[in-house]
Length: 555
Figure 1 (tube, one colour):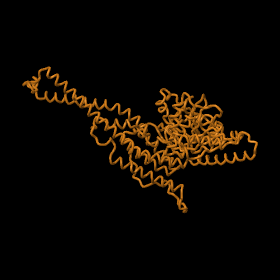
Figure 2 (cartoon, helix red, strand yellow; figure 1 turned 135 degrees about the horizontal axis):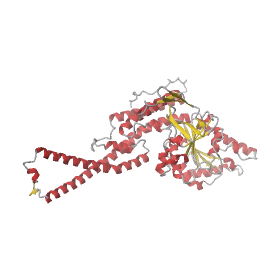
Figure 3 (spheres, rainbow, N blue to C red; figure 1 turned 90 degrees about the vertical axis):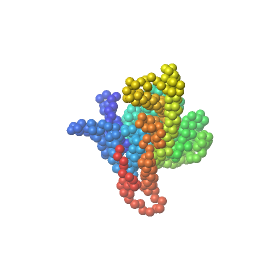
Figure 4 (cartoon, rainbow, N blue to C red; figure 1 turned 90 degrees about the horizontal axis):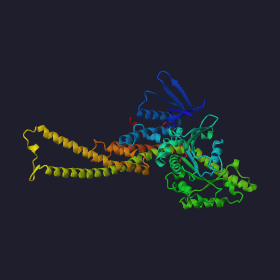
C-alpha cells in the first residue's frame, strides 16, 4: 500500500490522507478535490468549501499553523458562526503560552481539540458494540461476533463513496482533525516500542451513512486482558476526555457483573467524579436474552447494584437489543413489552447522538475557558513553585561549590607560602615588573571561572526539576509543555531572583481574563440560540455575532 498525505483546510485543518494506492487501484475520499497550479507549483486542496494553499511560501511553522487557523475560520463562518469567534480567543491563549514557553510556534491550543462532534462507544468485547453501530448506520460496517473480532480502535467518518474503506492507523496519527493525532507518542510512553506499531491500535473507516454526516464515531476494542491492555486503556482515557457523548455498553447475557470487576472499575469508578459525567450513557445491550426467563428487572437490578458498589447511585440503565438479531419471543404480550421499552430507549439514545452538534459547541467553549484557567491557576503556580525550588538549590549549590573552591584556594596558598602571618602576599602580586593589566586580567579570568561554576550549578540543579515537571503536568492535566516553560526561565540571561515566570505579567493576566470573559459571552450566545425561557419570539441573530473583544493579537 502506498499513501500520500497533504495539507487541507477543514474542520480542524492539518494533514489529510489524500489517497491510498492498493496495487493499481487508487482510493481517494470524494469530498477532497485536488488541482495543481503550474505557475507556482502549489497544491490547493478543497474540503468543505474552503482552501489552503501551501508551497514554497509556507515554509515556517508559524505560517503553517496560522494558515490552519484562518481556514478553520473560513469553514466555521459557514458551518457554525458562533464558534468562529472562539478561534480568535484561542489565538490569545496561544500568544500567552508561546511567550511562557508552554507552546512552540508550530502548535496551537485550537489544534489540540477535535472540532468534529465525537461519539465514543465503549464496552467489553461481547457487549454488542459493533452490532449497535451497524444498526445505527444502516450499514454492515463493523464485524460482529460473540468473541473479540477487532482489537483496534475504529474511527468512523462520513464519505460520499458508496463503498466503505478501512485506512491504516497512520492516517489518524498524522491528522490533527481526528482525536488520535500523535497518539503513537502516547502509546510509546506506556509501552516502549509500541508507538511504531500504530496500525495495530488504530484504523480509520469511511461509510456513506447519512447518520454520520457532521459527526465521528469511535468504536473501541474490548477491555479484556490482553497484551495491549495498558495501551488500550491509555487510548480509552484519551478519547473519553475528547468525546461529546460516551456510550458504555454491557452484555445482559452475562448477569454476573462481579466477574468484570476491572472493566467496571475503569469504565464506571474512574468516570463518576468527572465534571462532564452527564455525557456518559450506560446501556445494557441484548436484553432480549432475558425474555425466556422474563426477568429483565432482576438483571438490571444486578447491574445497578454493581454500579452502586462503585459509587454510581444516580441515573439509570438503557435496555436495548438489535431488532434484526433478536431472539424469538413467543408470548405476544411479552414481545410487545420488550419492543416498547427497546424502542423508547433507542429513541432516547439516538436523540442524544443527534444532539452532539450542540454539545460540541459547548465542549469547545468549555475547553477554551478551562485552558485559560489552567494556565493561570495550574501552570503558573507550578512553574513558580518549581522556580522557587530551583532557586534554593542553586543558592545551596553555589554556596557549597564556592565554599569548596575557597577552602581549596586557601589550602593551596598556604602550601605555596603566600601568607605572611595573616597577610596574603604572593610574590607575583608584589612584583614591580608585573604590568597593571595582568592583575585585572587575572581577576577577569577568575570572574569568568566562577560564573562558569555558577551556570554549571544552575544546569545540574535543573535536571531533576525538569523530569518532575513532566510528571506533574500529566497528573494535573495541563496542556502545553511545562518543562519547556521552565527551561525558558533558566536561560543564562535570566537571573535566579526573577519574581515571575518568563512571559507572565500584567499583559498575560489581562489576555487570559479577556478569554474567560469571552468564553462566558460565547455560552450566553449559545444559550440564546438553543433556549428561550421567556417564550418571546426569537430574534434573528447576526451572523458571526461575537462578544465585545479586543482585536486578535498578531502572532
